Length: 153
Image (cartoon, rainbow, N blue to C red; front, side):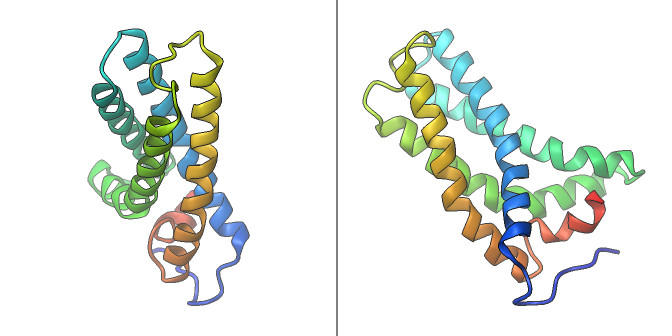
């Protein structure tokens, strides 16, 4: 049984923790997807699609890992991960990929180009700032990362 915070009692620190957790999975998948797609010369659309898929995969995996270690069965852990992270990952991915797409030269610069890496770091930072209030709002209503918060401790 999970303990959900009471409405209106969620501070920014819990939201920051949840958003950092989400950002970690998103960043691993996003960076890996951008690196693979760019290195292989894929189109922007293909690279973004791979980055999004990997971001969701790694985001869910990071949420599920402690749940599975605690003895939770895979279907239950997967259900909690989907409930906890889908909105946050989606917000981060939309923002992150829009920033990458619209920074001139970011997607076309190649892995050796500083513009690619600077834009990617900037995009992840912007995605964090946009997802933070979304996560705080969801947690304050017992949704999002709140559904697994007690399972992570």
